Image 1 (tube, helix red, strand yellow):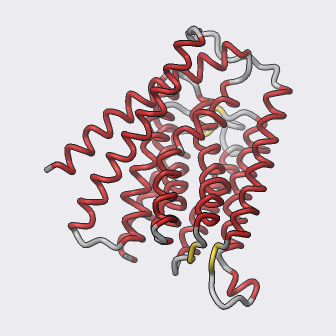
Image 2 (cartoon, rainbow, N blue to C red):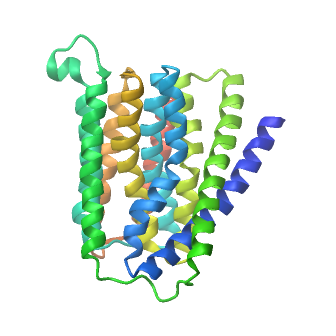
Length: 318
C-alpha cells in the first residue's frame, strides 16, 4: 500500500513542479528577451532530465548496467513516441526551422553515436560491448558541442517570447525554477521507487523494469512539463523540452554514468536503439508532410501506435 501512496505523492509533486518550471522558464525567456525555445532546450530540458541523472548515477555506482541503459534508452523512446504523441494530440505542434534542421539532427546524432559505441564486437572486433570511460569522455565532448550551439543560439537570438507570458520578478522566477526543480526530483524519485518496488514484487526483470517502469517514472517530468506547456500554447517549450532532454540523456547522463563505472551493453539493446533512431528520423520526416514544420494530430496518433507496439514487444521479450 505504501508504494501506491509514494506514486500518488510523486505524481502530485511532479505536476506542481512542472507547472512552476514552465511558468518560471517562460517568464525568464520574456525577461531576458530571448526565445522560449532556448529556455526549453536548456533549463527546462536539463531540469526535467534530473530524475534520469539521479537514477543513472546510483545505477553506475552499483554497477547495474541494465538499469542505466534501460532508463536512458527507454526514457528517450517515451519522450518521443509517448510524450510528443500525447502533446501533439492536445495541440498540433508548430516546429521552428532551427529545430527541424539542427535540434532534430543533433538528437539523431546522439542515437547513432550511442549505437556505434554499443556495438564494438561487430564494428571493432572487440571481445565485448562495453561503454568505457573513454567513451564517456567522447559523449561529454559531444555534449559540449551542443552547449556551444545553445550559447550561440542565445547570443544570436532576436526573437522575443510570447506576449501572453506573465513577467514575474527575478526573485519569484528563481523561486519557481528552484522549487519546481526540487519538486520534480523528489516527485520523480518517489514515483520510481514506488513503481520499481511494485514491479519487482511481480517478478519483472531489471532491464524490463528500467526500460518501462523506471523510464516512464523518470520521464513524467517531461510529460507533465510538455503537456502544461502545450496547454499554455508554449509550443517551443514542449518541443525544446523533449529534444533537449533526449540529447542531454545520451550525451551527458550516459557520459557521466560510464565515467563513474564502465557499463556493459545489455544484450538485445540494438532493437531499442533502432526504434529510437526510427522515431527521431520519423519526427524529422513529419516536418515535411501535411503542413510544413507542423506535427499534426494524425502524426501524433502514429507515434502513440508505434509506442504501444514497442511496449508490447519488450514485454513479450522480457
